[in-house]
Image 1 (cartoon, rainbow, N blue to C red):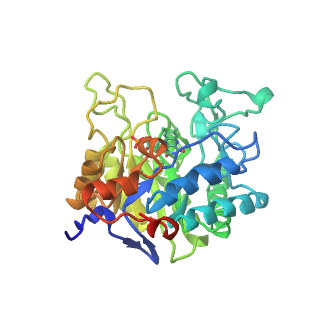
Image 2: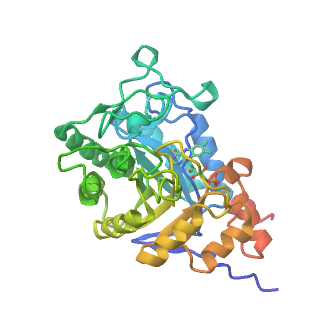
Image 3: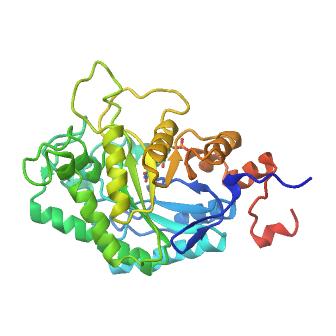
Amino acid sequence: MEPLVSKLFTPIQIRDITIPNRVWMSPMCTYSAATGSGLPTDFHQAHYAARAAGGVGLVMVEATGVNPVAPISPVDLGLWSHDQIEPFSRVTAAIRAGGAVPAVQLAHAGRKASTDAPWNGGGYVGPETNGWETVGPSPLAFPGLPAPRELTVSEIQEVVQQFAGAAVRADQAGFDVVEIHAAHGYLLHNFLSPISNKRTDSYGGSLENRARIVLEVIDAIRAVWPEEKPVFMRISTTDWVEENPQDDRESWTLSQSRQLALWASEHGVDLIDASSGGLDIVPIPHDRDYQTAKAADLHASTGVTVAAVGRIDDAQTAHNLVDSGDVNAVFLGRPLLKDPSWANQAALALGAEPRYVHQYDYVL
Ligand SMILES: Cc1cc2nc3c(=O)[nH]c(=O)nc-3n(C[C@H](O)[C@H](O)[C@H](O)COP(=O)(O)O)c2cc1C
């Protein structure tokens, strides 16, 4: 029998990079760097190599801080200094050896930074316990965390340049894709959402002003990142406030996300990774497609290349999302923690060709 041609298991070319299929590993913090160092360890190498050899087309390395106060926790990764390049290059080599495209998510955690690893409770850690003072667009706290210090305009410009500096180091470490983390209530999302941004200067107020830092980050990265390599951006398509009739706050919404996706694409972002939420603690629906439906909307309404993520845990769902043209690719998180070879197993279940590395291919 001829193998089924599932679009999920066909390559996608973005700029000059060909990604062998459309099942990708979603960024997931592993809280496994040596405290305060930002340096990848043997664990990172083994963890990412296993998912690459398991058949995903692209591995997105977890949120990686662009400066020393950008990580979510003191045990997160960072690309803020030269000595971090070489350990990251071992991670990219391991991902390539598994046949996947190495990608990294560049992040600044903003008002949700400086927290403990989740298995230690995830609470705020202060400067006396390897933490730091957090920063944000306005001195407004995320529930349960301290209020951040408001960034000055010159500090905003510094953060923009730090994203670019991290992109230069990501290129030197061998990454083919960088993703700007503008989702989940971290710094760039703090600027986008009227809930966390009450500034009255050119970085607050109108949608154009709230999106300014994001577009500046894209421009700064594009100025230093190779033309032939893609830039992705993860956004929260909604704060899940407009969906709640009891909550009448002005918030970040799907229609603003559509505008941001168009602007981002004009500024050189090649793909929107469409997640949601994280800005505040609010009710989120339990429907399986709670997030992927918004990703599909974003793709249909803007024509921008979009990847969906969230609760895509069976092969048929992943196949349907991509084969229908609803989205261009899918990111998987927890399913890949359970089963590093999820992508190859999904290919087999769908009757498509798995992407075995040659070391396994000749016996399977
Ligand atoms: C342990 C863990 C760590 C995560 N870390 C990140 C991260 O570093 N950056 C990010 O954008 N999302 C992060 N996420 C969210 C995932 O990338 C993904 O969007 C989410 O888990 C939903 O997908 P899933 O249902 O396939 O797990 C994390 C999720 C988990 C479970």
